Length: 271
Image (cartoon, rainbow, N blue to C red; front, top):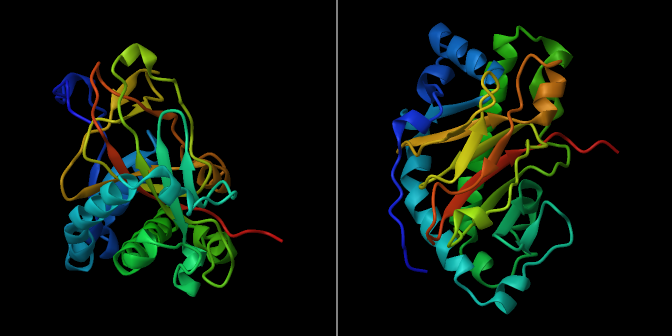
């Protein structure tokens, strides 16, 4: 698709969300842990600066993953439908205004053998990126447990045990814009899992400010990922952490292909 509108970031419409150093979180620096807890309380969205040696590889891999995602969605629909899975949280899906594909973390144990073609050919970088995101999500969850002084069985990590099945997974989106902003469907929602990690390159998402009820843009910050608290974590924290309403949209008329990388940390499945 060709771009018919130049999208700019207007500071007046930008959400004022914190950027927090992942290196300082891992080092358990009190100021970083305090900032993380404050942001998870309100608005429930924050940015994580992947500035340390332990996260540099993930940042370096982001351009390659975006390239693979674009390649994947450029395939013919019959080819993509080979990856269709009736499970809501897995496989390829096509909707009226976007396409998505999700690889569950549980599928890594079999080497993604259930996904033929393109995904099988590129499984190593996709699996490595997904596992890196999962590790980051678990570090953040541990830091939030520390911030709320949760101990033993009350720690949030206990709902995400590695030996237990879950629907946690790496999900990618292709969401082309509409020719007319008026044609964009309202999809305001909260996420159903624990934490959502996102890498974005365009103005494509707004949060609903819990204090003003106004929609504000989430900007692209190179070298950082966007994280939001989801419904399960709000429930586990007895409402101390906030799952914020947000929506995927566009700032104005004009067609542009947009891709979004996300990792959904979801709780263990309970038999």
